[in-house]
Image 1 (tube, rainbow, N blue to C red):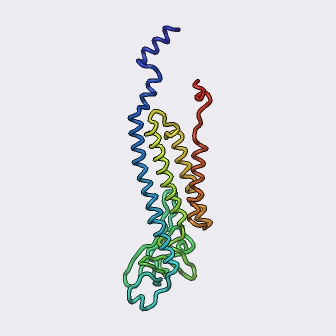
Image 2: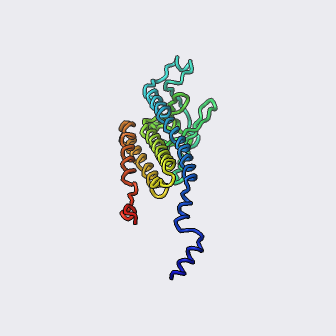
Image 3: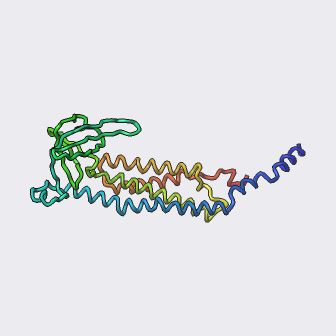
Length: 261
C-alpha cells in the first residue's frame, strides 16, 4: 500500500496542492483584477450617461410634449414644429404581425401631395387593428414626428410619442451602476489578495449576484412603470435590495475550513 502511494505521488511529478496554487498565481490574479477594474469603467460610463443625459432629456421632452398646444395658422406659416399640427392622410397599407421573436406594427400613409411615410406602433390596438387600405385618418405631428393617429374618435399613440416611462431609464442606469460596482470590487479584491480572493469569483457567487441584480432592477422598474410611481423610487428600492442580497448570498466558510481540517 505504501509503495502504491509513493508511485502515485512521484508519477504526478508534484504534490496535488501545487497545481491548485499554480492556477492561482499572483500575477494572473492581479492581471485579471486590473482587467475587471478597467472593464468596470464601461458600465460606469453608461450609468453616468443615463442619469446625466438620457433620463433628463426624456423627462424634458415629455414635459414639452404635454405642454404643446395646437399650431395656429401663423405658426404653420412660419414652419414651427414645437406645436401640435394636424394632417389628413390616407392609409396605403398596414402591417400587423405579432411574433415571438419580433413583432411588427406599422401603417404606411400618403397625402394628396404625393408624400409617403410609415409610422410604427408598440401594439395593434386600439386603432391599427381596425385600419384598412384607403381609410382616411387624422395625424397629429410634433417636432416633425407623427405622434398620434385617430379615426372616428379612436386614437392611438405611435412609437414616436413621448411617454412618461422614466422608471425604465432609471432601471437601466441602476443596473449599469451595480454591474460596474461588482466588477470594481471583484477586481480590487484580486489586487489586494491575489492568492485568496474568494468569494469574489465568477462561479458561483459572481454569476448569482449578476443574475440577481438584473432580476431586481427590472423587477422594480417594470412595476414602477405600470403603477406610475416616480422614477427615483427605482434606485431607492433596487440598490438596497441588491446590497442585502450580496451579503446574504456571500458564501460562508465551512466549519472544517475554519478549524483547519
